[in-house]
Length: 92
Image (cartoon, rainbow, N blue to C red; front, side, top):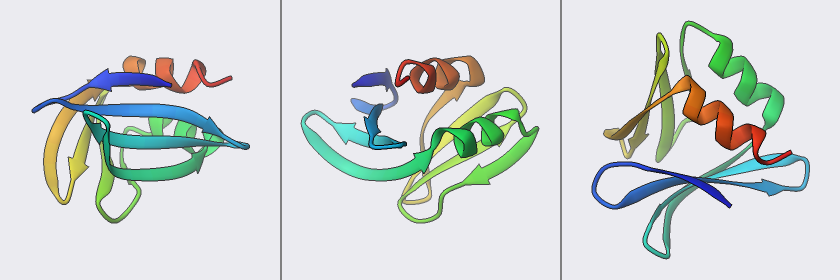
């Protein structure tokens, strides 16, 4: 499992789940939220200039080259496109 550290001891983790990527927002050993998505849809999201992916507790908002991770509507971290691409590429 590959992860990126966010605010307040939270991490965005990625793991392979069949043909999809499983993105998990975790605090310590506790999973706060997760989403399963295909790699192709995640790459399309990254290539867009601005956008939103996912609804519900875990959301990713893209503005320019930064991605803001939201948990329950509150920002919990900002990562670069490059960091996000790296954790998705590591799943292959």
